Structure formats: structure tokens, C-alpha cells
Amino acid sequence: MPGMTVKFTKMHGLGNDYVYINGFETTIEDPAELSRKVSDRNFGIGSDGLILIQPPDEAGSHCRMEMYNADGSRGQMCGNGIRCVAKYVHDHGIAEDRELQVETDAGTKKLLIETSANGKVSEVAVDM
Image (cartoon, rainbow, N blue to C red; front, top):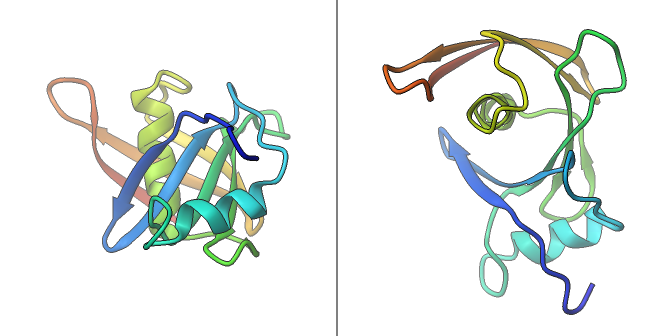
């Protein structure tokens, strides 16, 4: 991992902040270790964890959310984190639908996106 360069986005929703990596473009060999490093608020980027936005496993889904907590453990799902996933995939052209299906370790979640006049996401609702 030393010397590794990875493009990331840091996003927050209602107090939860995560580092997001586009798994459609980048492969992370040890996401648990990377999560520990980037989440450190003193020596890293500082976050509640790492979320990889991966290609879906199931037909009909738009993407898969792979979540790691700050300690490197796997997390099943975070409502605020998945809302940011929806914003990311829409704003980056991965999915243009208003209704999204995102796979998580807690099952597939349905999300509804609202956009502003500039076409960017302004609100996201998730059916938990």
C-alpha cells in the first residue's frame, strides 16, 4: 500500500462522513487496511469509514455498496452513507435513473433521487 495513489471523494450526510472510491474504475486489494488508514482523523483523511461503489452482482441493480468501518471491520449498511452513494452514481453518470437499487450487505435498498435545475442530486430518500 505504500506509494499507492487512489482517486477518492469524501462526502457526508447528516454527520456521517465517508471516503468513497469508484470500484467501477479502481480495484482496492485490501479495503479493510485502507479504511483504517484513511479514516484516521489525525494522520489520514479522517472519516467514519470507507465505502467502495462497486458494479452490481444482481441484474436490475445499479451498483453495490461495500462498506468498511474506521476500524476496518465490514459494515452492513449506513442510511446516510447509501444516500451519498446514490448522489455519487447519479452525478458521475454511473446511473441516470431517478429510482435506484443499490446492493448492500443488508440486502438491496431502493432509493429515490430528486435533482435540482442543474441536474445534480439535491435530495435522496432511501427505503430502509
